[in-house]
Length: 322
Image (cartoon, rainbow, N blue to C red; front, side):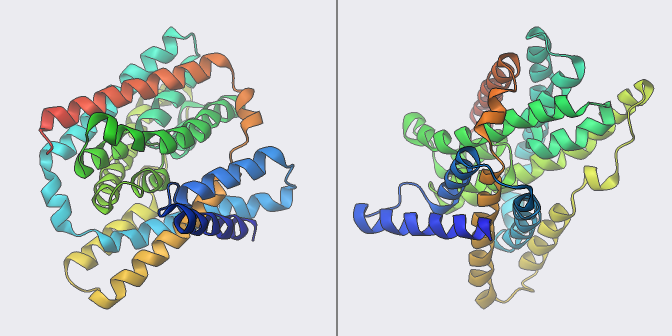
């Protein structure tokens, strides 16, 4: 109910913006994050809210991602081409190596450096949560590394669209950049929605390919970490169910098994569920917790993010994306 109230407030503010300023400068997806973070940071929420916040930011989000698959056809994947898919894999692997090196240079422990590198390079909290048991990370390491993804993720969502006019980027270029740099799938939606529908589609596609890299990376870390007593990765950690659902919906769309009349309601439902998930995501961000994460972790995360952005822009230039 709290997430629903935050979502309603976000929609109301978006309507007020459009009514008085002619357009919504901050859309409901972004507003839901900001309102949720403000509520969490300014008020002490009792424990009874946590289950609902977790459900909204995880299960509701995953359902929204599955429904989003109906808006993307296999033709869009084919247009991406093997060069882009190979480039995404290359960016992830290169970013992990650079991010780990930065972490060690900043005198982070081996486990903390691995967590930060995987979270920065793949998919934020999900990658950290999947990697932690494999390398035997303790709760303090996980909490500190997740703290940076929460706040930096919101900062990226708010600031990344500003690069479109600064770098004179096309919708396709920006979609690729967002998909390669933004931490979580819902944050990609929030970062691309204010720019163009094409940016949303390409950004989501690129991001999901990037998330699929979690499987091979976790397997590789598991093989290396098994010698030091780490746990073996589970199949659900390597291939999340919502990615399978997303690909299934995309296949149904490609085979014309979803009636055209159903596509707009599915898209609207996906958007509404995403706003609710964004509210849950925002309610999970406590600025006070981040302040305890430590300066070295924060600086490492910032440097790693800047390195990832530079690598991503280089790939866009290398591929010659129009």
